[in-house]
Image 1 (cartoon, protein in one colour):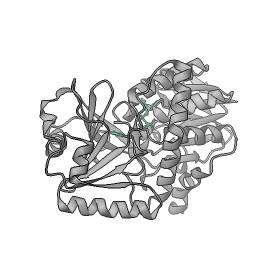
Image 2 (cartoon, rainbow, N blue to C red; image 1 turned 180 degrees about the vertical axis):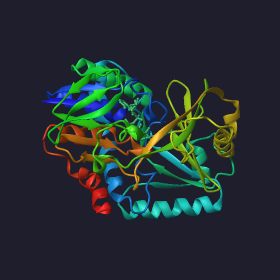
Image 3 (cartoon, rainbow, N blue to C red; image 1 turned 90 degrees about the vertical axis):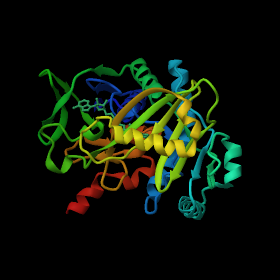
Length: 374
Ligand code: FAD
């Protein structure tokens, strides 16, 4: 079986690795692997803190992926000898004022109604857990099983694993879907050459619908949702775990890494394919972060970046057959693509290889949007 995967972000890379590990011949096509959202993302593995009413199937998918992470990175690290910065030290969510605390209380009740263990902390207990928090922090919620990974190290390890298992990397842009009869037969590239394949997976983030020749019903309903992040550095201990704050209704998070990097994010902006870093975006992040952690102003500034999350109409991934026989999509992972990498790779590689697909995949088929359109 010849498989062509368009896009080498976390989703395309992990699917290429798992599909090659199952014995298929895989070609991965990307002019600049791991240059999209996957290189900007903070890498929080936090299905619980992002929980929203009505998104219970996404929560189940997120929990399944979080619980699969340890085994996934262990296999990856063993195979490649490369680290991924995977950590399981929990997530602390804190509230800045009493309205923020009311929101956290509601979230805790919702989480408990779904049987998810979280621990409510007072302001003092939150500061005991993270001593750099501001004295005014009103209270918090600890999700002990959440964690984080360094997406840049993760993509480097995935690329090494894929290449080690014989995945052919083609550094070109895919421009066209090739068909034979009505079935997918490969993709045409921007240099005029072609990659022939029995199965084609579109995993190019918000660009997944860009190929010419896609029948209208096959274009995945994804749009770019811009996010700006700041990378800071510290030589002294500052935070021990991922910390999210609600500051007068506005959300901010900080993800510490073992090497002293701290990722501060993120804005959420509907501006099309715009990746400019703006003064206003950075100001909002620094303003809210300083309210929670006043010492942040002493940290060294390292980098600012903006990336494009692949957003779908219901904020959930779109994974499955996309119309013409042999054509599949794997995108729409929005704010959770790094978290959802292991489970998405399991689902997509099973689909590409006609193997049994994990049950959690059920609600995420592209068919849910065709039904809406019909
Ligand atoms: P991408 O990483 O965008 O990769 C798409 C790839 O497709 C790119 O490499 C691009 O070069 C390639 N491509 C595009 N067009 C073509 C073409 N025509 N031919 C071939 N290749 C092509 N998720 C989490 O789980 N936790 C987080 O903490 C988190 N934080 C985030 C913070 C920010 C600011 C942002 C922007 C995102 C964050 N995310 C987070 C979301 C996560 O980054 C995305 O969901 C995930 O990276 C999507 O991965 P992907 O492989 O689908 O797309």
